[in-house]
Image (tube, rainbow, N blue to C red; front, side):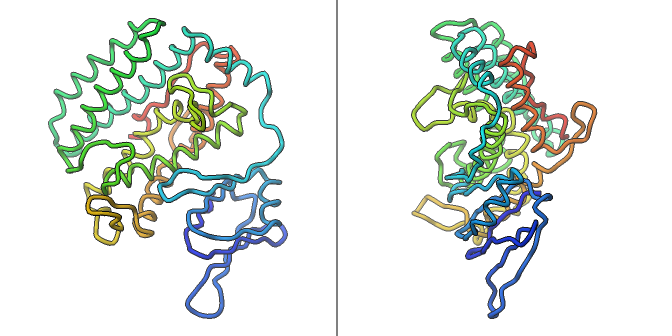
Length: 336
């Protein structure tokens, strides 16, 4: 269970093996809720709160991640056990693969192929569900995606990948705009649509980063996204295959069904810029975590999507170590 702290002024304490939340109320008496620590997998703090040292120690003893999310959904800090995670051999193997142009390109192509296939799958799904005419866009994207296998290691390989990814992204977001008007996909955009999507990606970003840290992977040593100071390149690589299944397909329907976008869901920052209000954040958080907790048949077992995120990190670690011959991205069609 993910424990979401989204009430301003919440106090997180503990008694025995239970976390105790004390929430402010209009009356003098605070509302109190208790949760067995063994049932909690993560504490996500969305709004200003306080947590006791005893609660922190209890969480760390049971490997419960404590993360603070910023105004735009991205983790701004986390309380993490100082015990080493994973083996040094895993990180050495990761470094060796990232330094090998051919193997790094193979993984980069897997990440981008997985993302683009999921975008195509979602367009096909919307075609059937909404009666939209996306057939031309789907055909064009499928055709250009096939050319990805022809890319060979070299100085221009990354630019070719970026070109294919960009072309398919333009067709994908352009198709979604036919169903709901928004300015287009702008990574740092502050319009209503991009503010909601970016907040959702921030939550997903946290799941990926947490999985990397617990498996023992270096989140800053990527294969496709270029290394830059303070930029967790591997997290940005792994997030690609989960963008559509976890965020796009969870938040876009909120706009289509007019469940998100009302006056109370956003706060105006400037004439053209908005940010999610507490009410809007709650809707996005609920939609994304509902998808993360959705179960699907995965490797012959029913697994929650958030557990599959962890599995994929382990899958990648095994690839680095040479225990698996290829990396297979998550397929969105499993959720449909």
